[in-house]
Amino acid sequence: MLSKVSSYKLLIPIELLEYTAKHQLYKPCLLYIYLKCHSSGKVKSTDPIFQLLRTLPGFEDKRTLTKHLRTLLRLNWIGFNPTTNIYFIRSFETIRKSYGFTSRKSVVFHYNHITDFRPFISGALICAKIYGVKFAYEIARLRRLNTAPNKKDGAKQCYSYDRKAPEYYGLSNKGIAQLLYCSPTIACEQKNAAEEADFLLTRGKYKVVLELDRPDQAIRSQLEERYPNLKGRLRFSRLGDKIQLRQQLHDEIIPQLKLKKRRKISKEFFTSHKTPS
Image 1: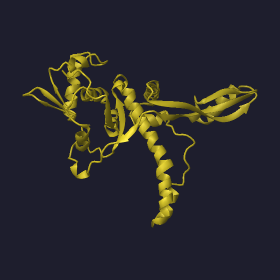
Image 2: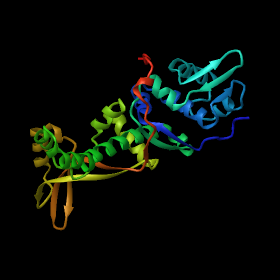
Image 3: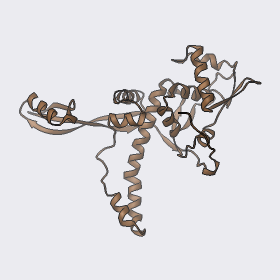
Image 4: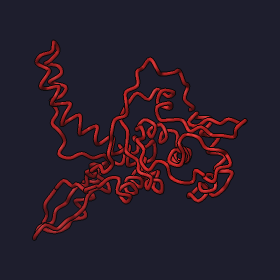
């Protein structure tokens, strides 16, 4: 019986989650991860795990489960032997080779994340982006600046890394939407869901535009009319005996998920694989 959890922690490739978000494969990916957690790589079609799966939200209907199993077979994330009625759960390394996922960047997944799986994917992609930007400014930039004088085109490299690090690290809803392949509205919802599940933390950020003696709606309306990008982003706030008109900036985002690196795969091992559109 394989209904027992065999893996409480996985190291999921970020590129696999990017592919999942791009092609809206949240349910099939959840099924794949669930099978990995509950097996050692093989599952008989009659195993109780398939009954247990139907207790998950969205998998209550047997037809839905069958549909997503077929998707996993089409994606080659799992295989099936009709003679033995055994499903083979592909390893992450096999999928990486098959799909040409060269990045070693992976996120630590714990079994209790299964109930917040879509927010987990959103949180993982957002955290990976923040970690990447932070690394570029705080580590890679300094490395380049320190080594550039020893290189032939050192001056060019110094100029390309001359930008100062931002005051804080974060993403706008539009930026998150591009990351998750969704609308800004859904991006905001996913950011909030990821924060509620403790996958990330946010801090609101503002910039003072004006200081007034009292709130003046006319000034706010004039500014919004003159600068359409400020519409809905101006707020009045009291500070002592003064009123500040503040512009809401994108939130600071503080990752709470851990990223690690999987082993490097040599490019010569990659197989030609046309990924489904």
